[in-house]
Image (cartoon, rainbow, N blue to C red; front, side, top):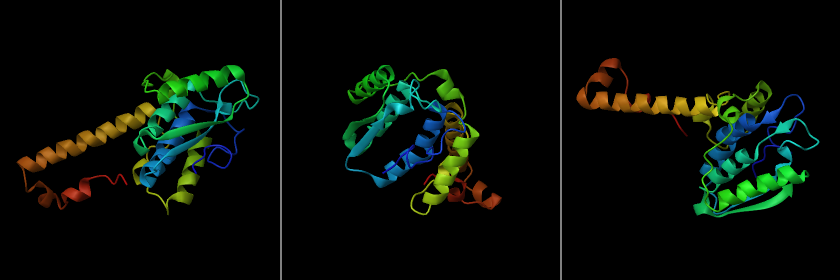
Length: 198
């Protein structure tokens, strides 16, 4: 069971706004890594859409597009065997928007357009601290090493950092093929240069 609200990292909301940047950071750094390591046979989602704007709890402002994107990513697990059960959401306008977007995602429509703020804004400090605390508690059960430096980043910056790491590894691998003694001269092995992504 992985949660972001009732018993999860954002259960103590009210200090700051929790929107797409915060939810995407939690999804990227906690939910997705744990789900991928667990390798589920089926994914069951208790969908509480009361984290969208328009509800009494003004601390949350997650968009329908964000919910649909997370649904799309979860659909890559368990050979696409995913079930979503409506659990919450009491504003009929935002509830219908979120349900429609997630159903589109389940039907195979690619969710490629998130609001610019969702991609370019970093999560707030309260969310970063909550995610760090959650990882500290669960790291004895799951591997989070690759994501520790991503927590405070926006989606845009996290993707950019990943690409830079890939480019660096590719360049080093290319260099080693042309100069087989470079690693030994530097006192490093090929394996030591690769980041731990587990």
